[in-house]
Image 1 (cartoon, one colour):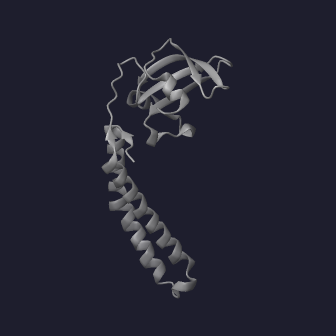
Image 2 (cartoon, rainbow, N blue to C red):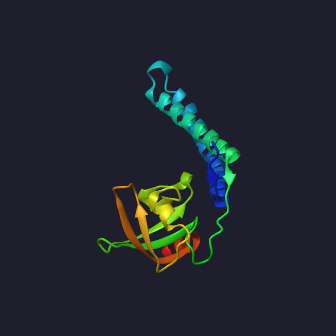
Length: 165
């Protein structure tokens, strides 16, 4: 299971592992100790919930470590004004004129509800390599397709900085 990740993805995962091992693990261990003192463990819901949360945290840490260990690091070879991994793109849907801003990310980080479009998604695949002003045909399936116009392209970090002001 080799996932393609960028250096940024790995840095984010390492930061999450650090937070979970230093902060969250300590808090959850304290919660387990606190709820253990409530009495009979067989009927102690709080204790079982605390143990479950502790185990979920440990599972997440192991998952992230495995992802990093087995990852294939990819580079974004796209040009400054070209759509590639970690680029934020504003597009206009040709059928209804609606504008949408998305960030093209690796498969692991994809989350359409947050505007993070995977490079493996139909839209992500279609956008790769294009630039502002290009009309792009997106084919979802042989029966479903649509056209978009690329309005702007910028590095995801720049776009995030602009949104913070």
